[in-house]
Image 1 (tube, rainbow, N blue to C red):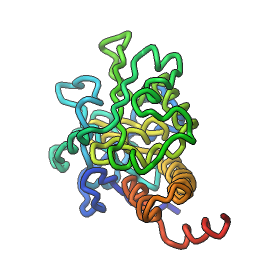
Image 2 (cartoon, one colour; image 1 turned 30 degrees about the horizontal axis):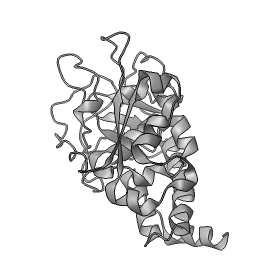
Image 3 (cartoon, helix red, strand yellow; image 1 turned 135 degrees about the vertical axis):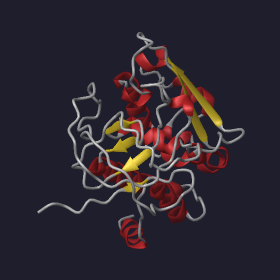
Image 4 (spheres, rainbow, N blue to C red; image 1 turned 90 degrees about the horizontal axis):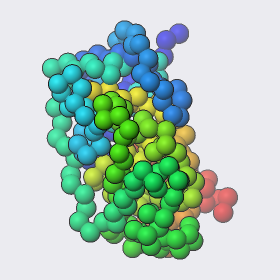
Length: 267
């Protein structure tokens, strides 16, 4: 029996739930952590919702004379195809995200730090030298963002930054070292969605942008809930449940109080 197809779009900037359907999409979700070159796409039909465009700084170049509309989409059925080059005119046009938060901690990484898995740019920019040295209140106020100054060997390489294995591996190491980091990112500028794209299997689409593997995204979000909520409580951050819930909502998930109650019972 076919699963009912439902698509949730991550309203990263506006924080809204999906409200309308339009268009069709093709090509399969990428099943691996480090995506291989795009496969030949097969036709399939599905429903789409409005999506959120991410900053142009995270685009590679123009493809077929049009900008890569980097947005974040989520389809829990996980069994449809998405064309990397589909561009229906009736798809909703979305506004770009808000600019970076003024005064945020800006982490700049380049080829050397990426290839060497060197976390010192993050540590220098934020002052977080070890997982125990971070005081969440200060970073929640200013937030953290990333600038990836990556020089490609082939200027014509069409891959997005989140499709480069070496870049993703750097973020895998960063996340392993500081697993609570997502809650400190500059959400309003789209940093949480881009961070998730570095760690969660996905496929790129010109029209839909970043389309996550649904099961992988769910596991990622739940893992962060189990990490972030106790961490905020341990540091005395007010209303840790609300902050954790807001983080999950940014990626399209709602977290009930029952789950937090279960976590509290085990501590």
